[in-house]
Length: 513
Image 1: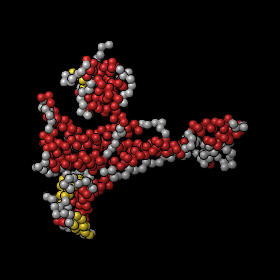
Image 2 (image 1 turned 90 degrees about the horizontal axis):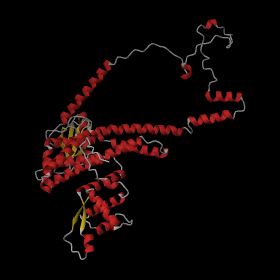
Image 3 (image 1 turned 180 degrees about the vertical axis):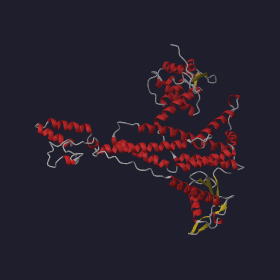
């Protein structure tokens, strides 16, 4: 049968025979051989002879009987799939013709073989691993961005250090993306899980809700910190960071081509991915905000499922079991009168809830008239379903809330103006000591306390500097330790005084130089 090549629309094309070794009856042998070559590569052994391949197969757990013909045939098949390459070892001394035949040919992994083995290892690792939402990764990304900004500002910083910091930043970003995708997939599968044992189901979903709630704590603050750090790098220009990192990478010129342009293109793609997560170029919603919404929706869904499980536990039996048991009682009833009493007891249809209703013209019906002879009374259909009759009344007037909305809008404008005035009073043109702030109004002092608390809640960088932004991301505060130590500083207001370490304080708009 002729094969048909299908070109993917995404532009990614996998060689046809790259993963053929994972199928068929000899798939375990093929996989063991590639694993043996992979372990040899980790020990910097790039070529193996026939006897060395057999010895390393035992090292990876292959103990089945294997003849030379079978092993040679497997090596030839892997070579036909371009996963192995074979060379002749002319530098060795051979004493016999048999030794020449066994040791002359040396096998090694091709680049396609290395990629195929790495792909299988990655697939097995994904199957065995579990995703996670780690706030420590967000803190690590913010720290690496701050470290890059510091290294670019320092005149004596080395290019190798910039390259290492950039590699750490990209590693943390890959961990965030991979763990988030895997955890989201597991979370959606958990939401669709049916038929599990109720006690285990309840414990797992309860623990997941607690895990998500802990992750969402201070998520906005961490995301704003990363976005502010990205904005600082953008002001300086990320291409300068990549240029210096390329010098520190010391890439070898393999194949005679310059690896620099391709390396810079990969850095551009990684940086675009980082901006899509925290500070999109087109102004769209950041992916970290989408993660926030997904987590909150998952919490609501999980809590609803937990409520349904709890409600089902309160009922000893279901409606089906109740009706079956009632049918057994009817079948065991001694007589018809007993069946009627059982019916009235089970369904409560005996009492007449319409006894309080009167005739349209009560004067036409004497009070001594028997129920049997009295004319019928119209009974509302709602009386049986909801226990009440129709009551028609006039629709209430709609309340005019225009004045209330105007008052609330005016109050919001006043509060915003007070907040802007406080930020303008606290904004500094250059770093100043806390002891030089002077007396403050109590409202401005509360804003300053909020900024100091946000900054002290973050971890300092290598120079001891702490950075934080407000909840709306508009104001940034920077605390640095003074050169002469943290002597006590006293901040005075109309309601008292606050004694604290004498930091160097800098308050500015977020993203400003």
